[in-house]
Image (cartoon, rainbow over all chains, first blue to last red; front, side, top):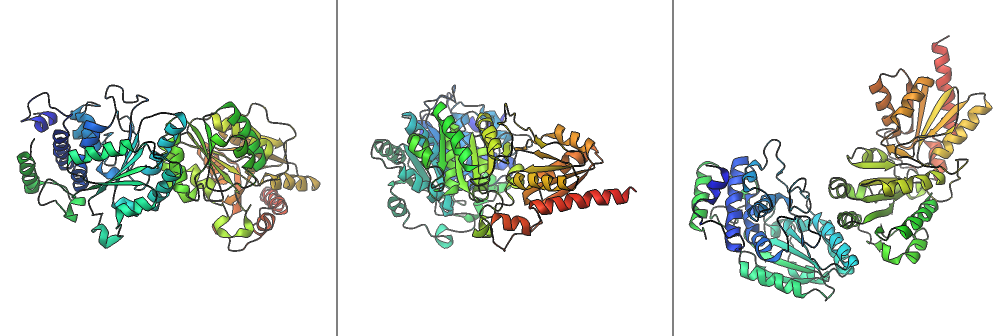
Length: 289
Length: 313
């Protein structure tokens, strides 16, 4: 059985990846398999992001899998590059490249690095990995579009722990100053970072209020409810013309979908192997859409 | 050099509306003519060099040619990772411009001494490094830099340096070293604004009957390998002069070329020893203090020739 067959078994074909619930499940399923095969980290962050990425790729982003460099496309930068598997999985399932390639994540000679890389990978807009870089680059893309009178949007997905980085707030100031109202940031607010909860590390609260005082339009949503997310993205779209950039603070749970990974800091780094892999797979199978 | 830079840049901005200049809230007086003439091509990103550099990368990914501008170490070391990851790795058309290479801001203290930038930027893959030595070289390299795809670094001196080239430099090509003065006995190689001292050192040596050839390297990376090897065949010593640490800059680049080619030519590196300067002073004072003013360069060259003669009686 190929990697693709293993992941896709049990689905009626063709799989409806335009359904965000299906796509979110597939992102989690790939996340589990990819980190299992590679003995890789960050499954907690990948699971936390699944509905956000699924909603973006299934419902929100104007992109063309057969023409990944289409100039009118919406841009997406995953600034929390350590959850790159979620982007790779979404892109592959949406037809940007072969699903089978996902099995090479982390492998010797692979182009699918642990932290997301754009080199040679159709649909990846920008490489990240060091936190705090993406929002400024996204602001640059949005500023270029504004100068050229283009109407596409630029999305940037950040982690909450990432917001410890000063460069995020430099970029927030710039986006406000230049009235980048087609820039939409999404923060995967799972309340955890590398070693501990955000609150015990560098507290971000009141988080939405911080963004508002930086001049942003802030929307809070349940980051695992694809309808709520879609509605938040709709509100962000309607915000064009107000001169304010928008941030969607998506309330999420790190490790969402597997009970023993949820809200457990261990699963920032731990790789699913042995009985833990089997148990996680069983839980995911029970949630198959 | 600053003024030559803005003069050329204004000409290039007129030709290309996609050319943007982004400053980190510096350049009062220097950039004013530019922002008055091309307000739509000028962006002040505030005192936020990391975001300035990321912003530039984003603009460049959308087809703009973007210059980032600041002084000393601010446009380089402060945002080094943005240069590495966001600009260089993405082949982003970002041209990083530093005013104040070396001890230009000598009196302002160690924070403002740009004395490791050449080495650090030279170490980054996919970054081209320009170190013009006088206003004529600035006029020659800036259009080349704008035409060179990808990320580049331009290290400028200050305002008001003398023009050392006798005539405008025609058809400068990327990576070319330029000979300013022919010589017979020893070669003085120079990168950046220290060229004034290197040239006057050659004049001092001439008074003692020593004919020093002076070569400037307006492009530090890629370095003019052929020219260095040719100099290595003609001279017993190549004296490399830079207002920069002796680690990793021009002297190191020259050593790499000669050693890899098995050249018997010897190299003397004149620059900052492996220290920060806690002493302040004018640029010229600090050059003297660290043995890289004209008198010190000439003295060192003379000593080298004497030692060679003593070794070969």
